[in-house]
Length: 245
Image (cartoon, rainbow, N blue to C red; front, side, top):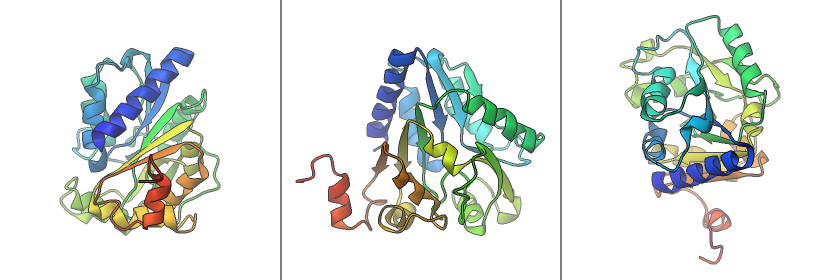
């Protein structure tokens, strides 16, 4: 799954570079993206010098040295592993309103070619927990993290206890994510089976933020057998490369 998704991502980056001379990407973090990003950053065909990177979200108040810092994640797993030099990271230790404003100006200055996202155990998209704001036009917003989201971070080993998980974060808004020309959504693991089913087969609702992906015309969802396990057969057929399979 990770190899297929990263090959797709590399091709999308390459097309943008051929078309405009540069590619602008949004990169998700977290355990679900590890193998995907490892494979993508090892792809020698990607001209990282022609890539501008934005990331989706960051905890408020978390030092960059903390293992759960998404800035650290991006630096260690993307920037320092490639020749990428142009990037905008979210500093959750500073004036978060100003950070949102500055990052918003940068990300909206030109269209984003492709956004890499995941889906949370509670159905969140970036750090837009339910009920998510589907109406704001602000590119980046400060959000409160719900208990399920914070519990996921502990379960994945980023924090030792709930008391250590920040209660707020900076997040790219739903509408801003959907402004990307293309979205590649990478969702492995049986923990994600229920939100994947709800996102694809339930109503489009702020109570399941990832359902908003169905409002975009160019989304590819990469699942493994575990995360796809609860999907109805008709749903699988609808999304299969060969509908007759």
